Image (cartoon, rainbow, N blue to C red):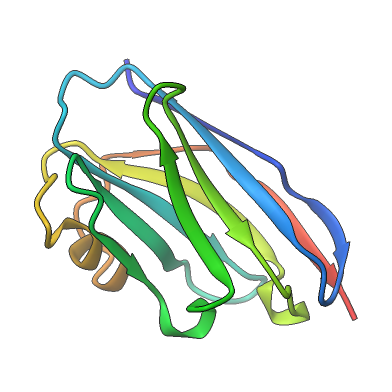
Length: 131
Protein backbone atom coordinates (compact mmCIF):
# COMPACT_ATOMS: atom_id res chain seq x y z
CA UNK A 1 0.00 0.00 0.00
CA UNK A 2 1.35 3.39 -1.01
CA UNK A 3 1.64 5.83 1.84
CA UNK A 4 2.70 9.45 1.84
CA UNK A 5 3.24 11.28 5.12
CA UNK A 6 4.08 14.96 5.19
CA UNK A 7 5.82 16.78 8.01
CA UNK A 8 7.63 20.02 8.69
CA UNK A 9 4.84 22.55 8.50
CA UNK A 10 4.29 25.25 11.07
CA UNK A 11 4.10 28.95 11.78
CA UNK A 12 6.92 31.08 10.41
CA UNK A 13 7.53 34.77 9.86
CA UNK A 14 7.71 36.21 6.38
CA UNK A 15 11.20 36.05 4.96
CA UNK A 16 12.12 32.94 6.89
CA UNK A 17 12.68 29.42 5.60
CA UNK A 18 11.02 26.06 6.17
CA UNK A 19 11.63 22.59 4.80
CA UNK A 20 8.81 20.11 4.30
CA UNK A 21 9.40 16.37 4.18
CA UNK A 22 7.33 13.63 2.56
CA UNK A 23 7.99 10.05 3.66
CA UNK A 24 6.97 7.75 0.83
CA UNK A 25 6.53 3.99 1.04
CA UNK A 26 4.84 1.07 -0.65
CA UNK A 27 5.89 1.83 -4.23
CA UNK A 28 6.06 -1.16 -6.54
CA UNK A 29 7.64 0.75 -9.41
CA UNK A 30 10.91 2.61 -9.96
CA UNK A 31 9.30 4.94 -12.50
CA UNK A 32 7.03 7.55 -10.96
CA UNK A 33 6.55 11.27 -10.45
CA UNK A 34 6.22 12.73 -6.98
CA UNK A 35 5.69 16.27 -5.87
CA UNK A 36 4.13 18.98 -3.78
CA UNK A 37 0.78 20.70 -4.10
CA UNK A 38 -0.79 23.36 -1.95
CA UNK A 39 -4.22 24.71 -1.23
CA UNK A 40 -4.63 28.15 0.26
CA UNK A 41 -7.83 29.18 2.07
CA UNK A 42 -10.57 29.86 -0.44
CA UNK A 43 -8.43 28.86 -3.40
CA UNK A 44 -8.06 25.82 -5.61
CA UNK A 45 -5.30 23.35 -5.10
CA UNK A 46 -2.24 24.02 -7.25
CA UNK A 47 0.92 22.18 -8.14
CA UNK A 48 4.06 23.63 -6.59
CA UNK A 49 6.96 21.43 -7.66
CA UNK A 50 7.27 17.88 -8.95
CA UNK A 51 10.16 15.56 -9.76
CA UNK A 52 10.37 12.36 -11.78
CA UNK A 53 12.12 9.17 -10.81
CA UNK A 54 14.62 7.95 -11.88
CA UNK A 55 15.71 10.83 -14.11
CA UNK A 56 14.95 13.64 -11.64
CA UNK A 57 13.34 15.99 -14.13
CA UNK A 58 11.81 18.89 -12.23
CA UNK A 59 8.93 21.23 -12.82
CA UNK A 60 8.42 24.20 -10.49
CA UNK A 61 5.59 26.70 -10.58
CA UNK A 62 6.68 30.19 -11.66
CA UNK A 63 5.39 31.89 -8.52
CA UNK A 64 7.83 29.96 -6.33
CA UNK A 65 10.69 29.44 -8.74
CA UNK A 66 13.94 30.57 -7.14
CA UNK A 67 12.45 30.32 -3.65
CA UNK A 68 11.25 26.70 -3.42
CA UNK A 69 13.51 23.75 -4.16
CA UNK A 70 12.38 20.14 -4.44
CA UNK A 71 14.81 17.33 -3.74
CA UNK A 72 14.84 13.56 -3.21
CA UNK A 73 16.61 11.25 -0.84
CA UNK A 74 16.08 7.91 -2.51
CA UNK A 75 17.86 5.94 0.20
CA UNK A 76 15.48 7.31 2.82
CA UNK A 77 12.48 7.34 0.46
CA UNK A 78 11.81 10.98 1.14
CA UNK A 79 11.04 14.04 -0.92
CA UNK A 80 11.73 17.49 0.44
CA UNK A 81 10.50 20.97 -0.33
CA UNK A 82 12.89 23.65 0.85
CA UNK A 83 11.06 26.96 1.04
CA UNK A 84 13.15 30.11 1.27
CA UNK A 85 11.98 33.68 1.66
CA UNK A 86 8.44 32.70 2.59
CA UNK A 87 5.64 35.18 1.92
CA UNK A 88 2.20 35.44 3.53
CA UNK A 89 0.69 34.31 0.23
CA UNK A 90 2.53 30.99 0.65
CA UNK A 91 0.18 30.18 3.52
CA UNK A 92 -1.56 26.92 2.62
CA UNK A 93 -1.92 23.26 3.36
CA UNK A 94 0.88 21.50 1.50
CA UNK A 95 0.29 18.02 0.16
CA UNK A 96 2.58 15.36 -1.20
CA UNK A 97 1.26 13.37 -4.15
CA UNK A 98 2.54 10.67 -6.49
CA UNK A 99 1.76 9.39 -9.97
CA UNK A 100 2.91 5.77 -10.00
CA UNK A 101 2.12 5.33 -13.70
CA UNK A 102 4.35 8.04 -15.16
CA UNK A 103 8.05 8.37 -14.47
CA UNK A 104 8.79 10.04 -17.78
CA UNK A 105 10.52 13.38 -18.21
CA UNK A 106 7.12 14.91 -18.93
CA UNK A 107 5.66 13.56 -15.71
CA UNK A 108 6.46 16.60 -13.52
CA UNK A 109 4.87 19.00 -16.03
CA UNK A 110 1.80 16.78 -16.42
CA UNK A 111 1.32 16.46 -12.71
CA UNK A 112 2.27 19.88 -11.38
CA UNK A 113 1.30 22.16 -14.25
CA UNK A 114 -1.70 20.25 -15.57
CA UNK A 115 -2.80 18.58 -12.30
CA UNK A 116 -3.01 15.28 -14.11
CA UNK A 117 -2.26 11.75 -13.01
CA UNK A 118 -2.04 11.92 -9.22
CA UNK A 119 -2.76 8.48 -7.80
CA UNK A 120 -2.07 8.91 -4.09
CA UNK A 121 -2.07 11.82 -1.66
CA UNK A 122 -0.79 12.52 1.79
CA UNK A 123 -2.97 14.19 4.40
CA UNK A 124 -1.11 17.49 4.21
CA UNK A 125 0.84 19.77 6.49
CA UNK A 126 -0.13 23.36 7.28
CA UNK A 127 2.25 26.23 6.59
CA UNK A 128 1.30 29.58 8.11
CA UNK A 129 3.38 32.61 7.14
CA UNK A 130 2.86 35.69 9.26
CA UNK A 131 3.58 39.21 7.91
